[in-house]
Image 1 (cartoon, one colour):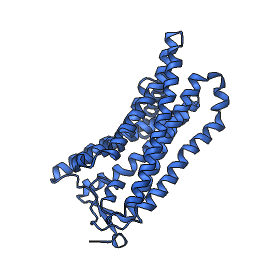
Image 2 (cartoon, helix red, strand yellow):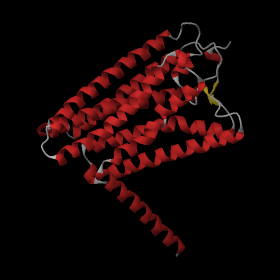
Image 3 (cartoon, helix red, strand yellow):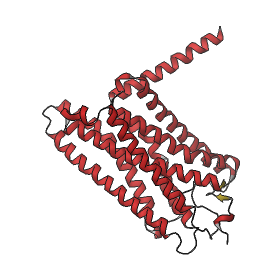
Image 4 (tube, one colour):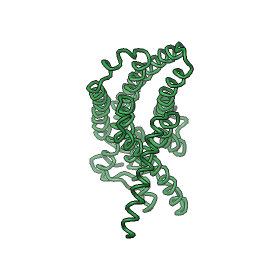
Length: 319
């Protein structure tokens, strides 16, 4: 029996029992992490450098890529380091920082997805008022409004979670410091305050989800009334990637936090955590660029410019 005040580290879930499997897990997560860095980095660079993409939709997409980069960088590198060096330890302060950053970035991402749904609603259902409702100043205010709740939410959750006495050891059955797994280490019913906060957050998330769905009901109603097939195709191309990201994000999060305790097992918990913490940040760039011609053209320019610059540098060094 140990008290949280005497803990100086936590033990995360072991990646594997054998050294070969540990290195395999390291390689798999390294590939996923590099794909997330490359995809989101290319979108950030393309949007920042291409003046044609300096519009509200791409401004919010840039913010989403920054949040995705932060989310995947909060959890994956530590797990890769533990797999490579055959250890499970994470310091108490490191665990608290991981919880804070993960909750902050995840909350900011969901708020931003809600703002992006509003942006698409105004663009399609109220195009004549778009410049007024979603101007440059309004974009900055909406982005700030999306990031702020995540910060406050992270402060509340981190403060509550790490003020709870922990009496069930220091082993966290997850590859990163996840609040539900830390709560399993708490004493008796002392976790109920934090569990209540999680329920409140789930209700807020559900409210945002309802807002997004109602926005899309009106969006699709308006799209189906567009007379030209090209106009409908362009509207669907703008909306479907966002809807796909929302669906992936919400379904994995809800299952992770609302699944019955009877379904809980280390293997299933690990799979679900990877699905909601690692897969969306990696797939989001692919989903958004798949049907977006403007973004694909900008990404091609970034890639070609990178290779051209690298070639020139290599030639200069050779000379």
